Length: 431
Image (cartoon, rainbow, N blue to C red; front, side, top):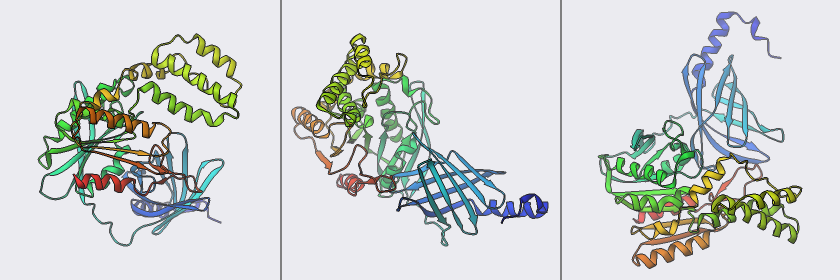
């Protein structure tokens, strides 16, 4: 049984604590394990000051790099607590530091727990093939902050600006792909969406054009960098970013290529019906249920995107509220209504008609947020009609979802489609 810390001589306790402070910071290689599923993870811990620490983690399987922990604590000589807050859940890791090992348990919910084990590599971690530094640029009165990753060397290199998906995305959201590009000779600019992290403004009040002009400003900023080949700067956007990508190209004459990942090629109200139906239909248990879901979703979208009075929507909600699949309409003051009205005006094909640079359209076959094949057909037809010689490549990855992931393993962690990242790198290398 461990002796209470209070009986230790003060000098011994201080020495043990100081030793632990020296051992905890650094890079740790290891894994998380749950339900017989193991996932490789790299942990980076930094000692900021006193008893204040910060930490991030990388995981190729999750396609993340530099994801921050919300809280890092070291108690006494050996007890380590890390708290990771996600969009929907919070995971708490409780571990014990013993020499060059850090092991323990984590709990994400009352029904989801597992273990972890890390060790400190005996050899120094190899230096990455790229340098990175902070960068800022402006769009009107909005100041945007990000990180520029540039391959080492002296020659001018091509570059990619990453355009955000929906919601409050920081630069970390694209960091994994950015490191993949930078490791293969292509610079990458990732930045905090307006109103997120170190960027000013408010993404919730932004129009599609505001966000597209933010990305165009990022392209203009890259053209000032001596290591960047100004003739070879492209954009990559996923989901909302892929949908807005052709507008970025139209607003910035210096964009040399575009990767639209899970970008919509249909009117925005049609995409919303597709997405919401896929979310709610699994709860339907009969043909009658399915018909009611479709009627309700259609009315919800008609109110949100087309400005129809909501009396019939409220009537349907009242009549269907006891159904297993039912989700009530957002409250009248919810930002959903304003967002929908603004995005209803955006027409992707209007902007695709102006694109004359090489295009990669990439989708997951089982995307339930954006209809992949119909989007491809409409975008391809538009490009062919307006510029028959446009260099268009289409890649639909079998079995993959909206985020290019396959069904998760037994631990619940996603599995990335094997050909997703190689497809991006091959297409870029060819151009």
